[in-house]
Structure formats: C-alpha cells, structure tokens
Length: 297
Image: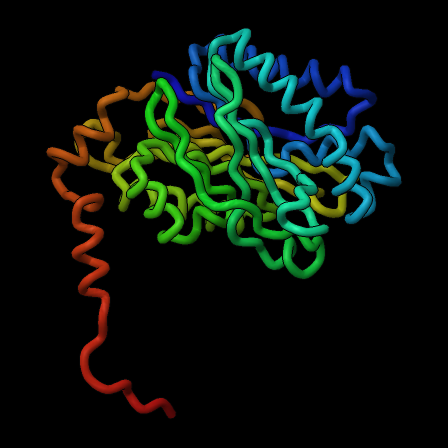
C-alpha cells in the first residue's frame, strides 16, 4: 500500500470554492502517486477562518469560531473525495465546539474512508499555547479505527511526544499511527519528529507525520510553520536502517509518499532483531528504583 503525508501550506482564501479547489487538487495529487491513505496536518482548517475576512482571521478568539463554522461543509467535502477516489483521508484538524466538552473548542481531526466516515480523533494533551492563550481543551478519548489498510490510530502533534498515548493505541491493535502536526519553529518540528520516530520504534509500527509549512501572516495562531512531511517505521527487518520510509525536505510543500508492505508490521513484531513491541510490559514492570532517594543539596 502507499501512504502519503502532506507538508501543507495555509492559504488566505477568497471564498469556499477556493478551499474546495485547493483540497481537491491536493487529494488528486496524492491519488495520482498511488496513495491509498492521505494524512493532512493539525490546524490545517484554520485557513477557513479567512472566509470571515482578515479581521476575524487575525483575532485569536474570532478565528476559532470562524474556522469551526465550516466544519460540516469541510467534512462533507473530504467525505465526497474519499468516496469518489476510493481512498482513506485524515482531514486537516481544526477547532470544533462540542457541547460534550463545555464551552471551549476541541482540536479535532475527522477520518474518512471509501465507504464513508470512520469517526474522529480529538487531541489529548494541550500545548502551553493552547492552554494559556487559546483556551482549546482536550476532547474525547483515543480511538483505533479498523480499515481495509489495517488498524489506524491518531496522535495529534503534541500527543505524539507522550509514549503512553502511543502505547495505548498499539495495545489496542494499531499498526499505523497518524501524526498531524502544526509547529512554529524547527525545534518544535523536531520534538514531534523525535516523538513520532520513537513511537515507531517502541511500537514496531508505521508512523505518518504531516506538518503545516510556511508563513500565514494573517493569523496570530498559525503565522509561522516549520516541518517536513515523512513516513517512519522501526529500523529493523523490512524497514530502512534509518527508519525513514519517505521524507520531504524541511518546509517543502507537497506529499511524502511511502510504499509499505501491508504485512511488514506483523512480520517485524514476530521475527525482528528486537521485540520492542512485545517487551514493553517487561520494561514497564522493571521501571522501578531500588533504595532510598538520594539526598539533594
């Protein structure tokens, strides 16, 4: 199978048709390369805030509401494309005001397949910016999606930096982890990248990293974006020695497309040089310290 990770630049849109044309063009470009699973980035839907004009897009609170208002239309567009092209698409995440989580928005990514919606995944752990300035809150729990391509889990950006979240998905059967991200600095991108590669190593699974890239000066929230789209695996049997299956250059817009043997994850877990996946419980059981705590100065 072929998996595509987007390095996606945000646009100031003149109208809804411009957004629809842009997303359709991106999907068709990936499908043209044979991709069956397409992953868009975190907060990719913040560009929809520009449909309310420059003033709304430039305001932290107004931009959340402006982008969220287009959720139903954007989901319907992605669903139509997934059905028509016969592919699986993790849509760009964006703010959603869901009464189940109070008055503040969650950061939600919807997942679609050739036969319709699989569901959605909400971000679990908020960054300092989301907590302290934007007031975006955690949403629903982690989920694993059963697809024709395998069992898929989603770790939105910062979530990929926490091993217990990735492990929970792997223990629930996930073979592919999708990591949409939005980071304003190269250091932030590398934090997510290191987390994504670590999740691939310890879970002996495929991890797909799709970032936003480039400048969006019209927004105080997503004004600067740094990243490189990539697909990772464990550096072991059936995977590259570097663990990098496909990668674009830093801040290079476009798709990183990797071809993966559908049986590669099961095989490396069963006969790899190491058994990180199987030995996790052993490591957890031994993660204790003996003796008294050292006296601190």
